[in-house]
Structure formats: structure tokens, C-alpha cells
Image 1 (cartoon, helix red, strand yellow):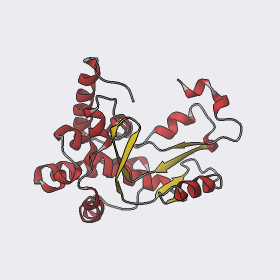
Image 2 (cartoon, rainbow, N blue to C red):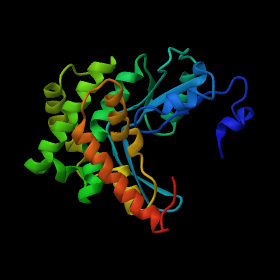
Image 3 (cartoon, one colour):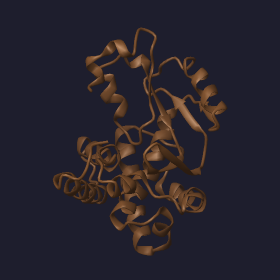
Length: 236
């Protein structure tokens, strides 16, 4: 159901922590709840769901980062970080989670749509020059959008990020299948609206062309739409 219709679920001291991929989720929640109670998490842990109620962790690249895009007090996140860490996944509270989220956007937008479209794991995309060229174009477009919208990440130029992407970020995840890939196979709604779709919409707002992200977005939406129109899919 629509959480905005039930504010009592959150309560006076309750906090909302968004563990979703992509960009724009915090703004959606901020339209219905106080901004100072909304937090984001950057997660670089790969999962697969082979069957109902079963989750396999396929890769764990870095600790979970918790923070606020709205300058909220970070103290309430400390107990959550401690609890998740005790559960087996290192978690820390960070001052500028926005940089982490855009780093994840670069990674996900380069890999997730192509993995779903070509039906391959991440590693195959890094092996072929044709897919590498597409991914590098995606990354360049995102840097252009970030520059025009005032967003920042941990790298100042696409070439700098691309080198780290191929040398450090991609190798540990070569066997992983993206969430977009898994959702298409399971005939579910994907996260593409918050990934390539978000890049396209931000680009339109500041008049920065994003033709490669636009094309990948439309291709995944076609695949998603076919699944749902055939009556075999489900919304996630």
C-alpha cells in the first residue's frame, strides 16, 4: 500500500532508510515525509534469489554506507550501522553519501541494462570491446549530467573513473548478474527508472543529451513491458 497514507507507521521518532539502487528515491519519500527523517544507504553487495525466501550473497565489494542527502543528524544511524555490522555485513555512517550514490549510479548504469539486454553476467561486458565502448559512453554522459546538475562523486573525470572501473571495481564481480537482469528473467518490474531513467530525466532538465542512456532505458522498458503485458510478470 501507499506508505504516505499511513504516517503512523513511521511514528514521531521513526526514520526511513532507503536501501534502493539509483537516484531520486529520497525525493519521492521527501514529498510525503519530513526530510530530516529520511536517510539513504549505499550497498555494494550482490545478491541472487534462487527461490522464495532464499538469498545468496554472490559478492561483497565494500561496506554499506549510511547517510543523509538532506543534511540530517547522522546520530540515529549509528545503532543501525552497528546492528548490521554485527549481522555480518560491515556498515558505517558517512558524511557525504551522495558521492557514494553517484559512484554506484556510474557502476549500475554501465552494467545493469547491458547485462539484462545481452543476458550475460558483468564480466562478459568487460571482455568485449563493443560492450566496453557502450559502457564508457554511458559513464561520460553521467559525468556530463553530474557536472550540469552540481552533483559530485569520488572521481573528477570519466577517464579517471573508467580506469578504476576496469582495474578494481569490475574484477571482483565478474560472475554477478545484475538485479535488472534477474528481474527481467523473473518477469518483474526493474529498477531502470531510478538508474538510466533518472540520468535521462536529469539530463532533460539541464539540456544535456544522454542518447546512450536513453537507448538502454528504452530497451529495458521494452523488455519489462513485454513481460508485464503478457500477464506473466509482477511488479516488484
